[in-house]
Length: 394
Ligand SMILES: Cc1cc2nc3c(=O)[nH]c(=O)nc-3n(C[C@H](O)[C@H](O)[C@H](O)COP(=O)(O)O)c2cc1C
Ligand SMILES: [Fe+2]
Ligand SMILES: [Fe+2]
Image (cartoon, rainbow, N blue to C red; front, side):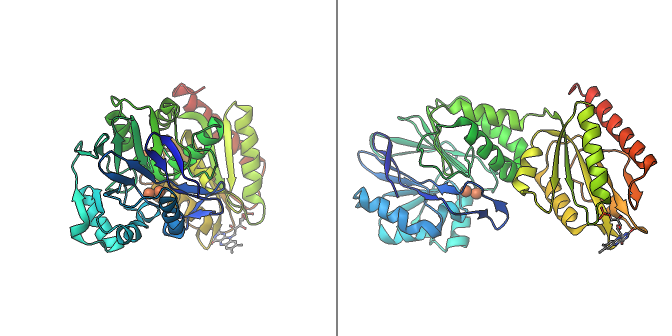
């Protein structure tokens, strides 16, 4: 609950969630997160950019009290997801003259999700501006940052771009501005991988759309503020590019050690061929780490034992997630072990419909791997090496 001034008359009034460890009941938050809200005092009107998660409502309200904010004219809603919009109803109640400024689509969501009434809205279009006296807000529609209603707000005079989820990071830190770029790079990449990677092509367009804006500061709604915008813009450019790296991601499970033996033999075979390997034992793995590895990798090898005539349920879950995240993988393969038979390979292949991958010949062995099975794994490693070489990755 610390109010801080970013630039003259522009304040951070959000909340840091140090203890949160799960988002959307799915995404691990190893470093917590923050819900950034910003108050802009124009010479004539006062605008609040986004709010906070309902669990932190009291912190936003205390921050506004600390700043002795007696009136809010506009609540700018860049995104309707509740971690940013959830406190809007409370603010509307506390500041009865306030209007919610947003685009049509976001308005519809806010009516459905938070039951805000029609008369509280001011609807804006792409590039429309709103004067608050000596400061001007420009709204830049950017649908599908990960929901269809997202937008950015550009504060012209101060050259600040408020991007909400876009370019943000789940990171609880007392730093208002980024100090440790390495740490934020990791957190922002994790966030991109989990939330924005499925919309990579659209994200690319958003980057182009803001390319000619003069931006001195990027103020997202999670994680620290960027006073060197090119740091995060360049990182995003790399992540959304069509380039893949000489990397193999291996999500795996083994109940009794056979698949595990295959995976560890295969890891060494790839390392010996100069290929970077990122194995994820799904009984222990953080799925955010798996998502991050998928941002750059050229190849995925899914390794599972046969269970009840199909892949292990945890592998099914991970495969579903991989497919939904739409990484730019080029090759996929299945390896594993079985006892008497089933449809694991077919099942996994059929789950990868979103990926534009070439499926390589699987290596599925009966029971514990034997000499000829290790040879098959060597051949698979050779094949992956050849494919990566052909793409110029090696
Ligand atoms: C709960 C369970 C269900 C299984 N269901 C099948 C099956 O439907 N078809 C099959 O071929 N093997 C089945 N098996 C046998 C395993 O696939 C086989 O033992 C395999 O070698 C296990 O590999 P792992 O050591 O990597 O766990 C099952 C094993 C267990 C424990
Ligand atoms: Fe969101
Ligand atoms: Fe968010």
